Image 1: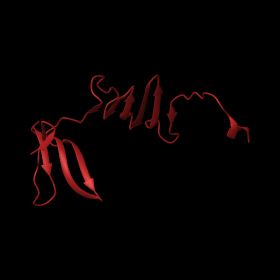
Image 2: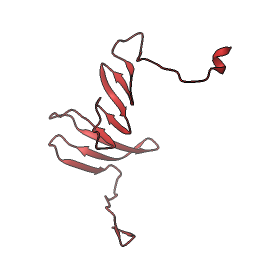
Image 3: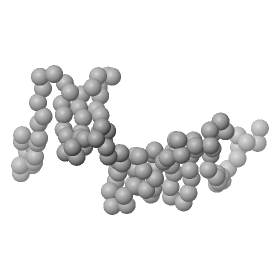
Image 4: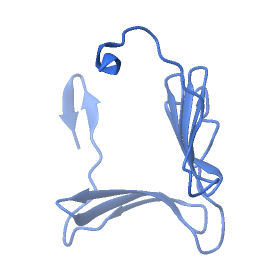
Amino acid sequence: MAYKYSVGRRDFGDIDYEGDDNTQIDFDVDYIAFVTNGISMLAVSGSNVGIGTATPDATEILTINGTESQSDQTMIKFTEDGSDRALIGINTSNNILIENLYSNKHIVFKASDAGTARE
């Protein structure tokens, strides 16, 4: 039972799923990525996170990389208790889209006015 009492640093190489060569966890110095279908789908590099990219932008905290096409959109979806509430992203015409998915509700922007939040 010595393994329960091991102390000190442990080093790991990349971890491959034995049933699929295209699925792995990729470790490097200050870097970790989850790879599916041979593509890095989630990567953490230093303090930066990338979704859909192996190389998050070093000047931004979060980089989301979608696929540009006439039929695909790159969206962040917000849900509450399993119900769709909002979408924010880029639509198929490359416009920024902010959409409220909840019936009969508004999109509200607030700004600080001398320390008071105002619509």
